[in-house]
Length: 380
Image (cartoon, rainbow, N blue to C red):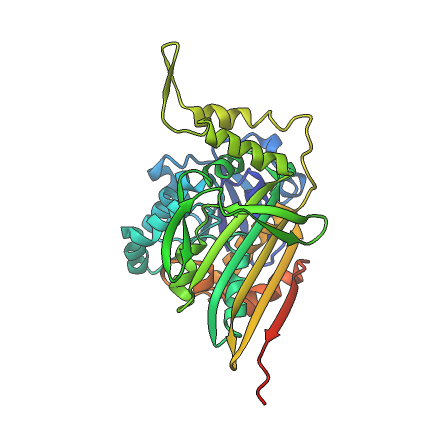
C-alpha cells in the first residue's frame, strides 16, 4: 500500500506518517509538501526506507493529479483547510484515488458535500473521507459509538482545548479564522448560525488541563452529524486555545478590527489586518505562558434507552500531533482492508466502524475515560 501525505512535512503530516511506517501493509509513504527542506523531517521518518519526499503545490491541480495517481490513498494534512481541502479532494477524484483529510474548517466540509465532488467521487467509485483527525474525527466516531447504544439521541456537545505550546504553521490561521463571523451550530433541530467566540461556558478536561473556558467555534460537526444520527435536536461544538490569555487577546483583536479581512490603505499600500495579525502571532507568545504540552477532547451524548435518560461522556488528553495523526492513519488502513465501503463524500460518523476504530486507537496507546449516567423515575 502506497500513501501520499500532502502537507507531509508539517507537524500533523509527520504525525500521520510516523504511524504509517510502523504498519506491515505500508510499502511507501510519500511526503508531499511545498517546502522540501530535508532538515524539517523528523529522525524516525528520515531513517525509514519507506519514506520519500516530493514537492507538491496544492495550487497546481495537474501536478497534484499526477502525484496522487502514484498512490493507493492520499491523506491531506495541508491546512488551513478552508483554503486547501476542496482543491486536493477534487484532484484525488480526478485521479480516482481514495482521499482522507483532517479538515477542521466547516466551509470546506460544506462545499465538499454540496459540490459536484460528491457525485464525481461516487461515479469514480472512491471515498472522500473528510474530517478524520481528532476534532473532527475521533470524537465523531465516539459520538457514533455512544449513539449506537441508545434508542434515541437528543443532544451532542463536543468540547476541545489546544495549548498554544502545540501550535505551529497553518494551525494559527485556523485558530483565528474559526471565530470570525457567523458559524454553524445545530440548535433545536435545525442549523443556525451564531457569532463565533460567543456562548462561553466552563468545561472540565482531564489533567493537566482541568477547567477551561470554551466558546462556539467553526468546525464541521454541526453540519455532518445530523446527516447520520437522525432525530438529534442539538449538536454544538465549542473550543478554546489555552492559556486563557490567548483567547482573550483574540477576542480583543476581533472586536477592534485586527481580524478583519477587508483591506485598508496604509500609506498607499493595501494591508489586510487579518494577514498582519496572523503574522504577528508567530511572535506574540514569546516570553509568555504557553501552557502545557497537552490538548484535550470531551464528548457528551444525551438520549434515551429503554425509557431511561442516559448521558455518556468521553474524555481524552494528550499531544495534538499523534492525536490528530493516528485517526487518519487508522482510517487509511481500514479503507485498504475494505472496512470503509461508502463511496462519495462522507464524514467519519457515516462510514467508520466505531468498534474497529477505537480498538485500533487503544492498541496504539490512546486512553479514553468514559462515564454512563442513567436517570430514571421509579414507578410505584
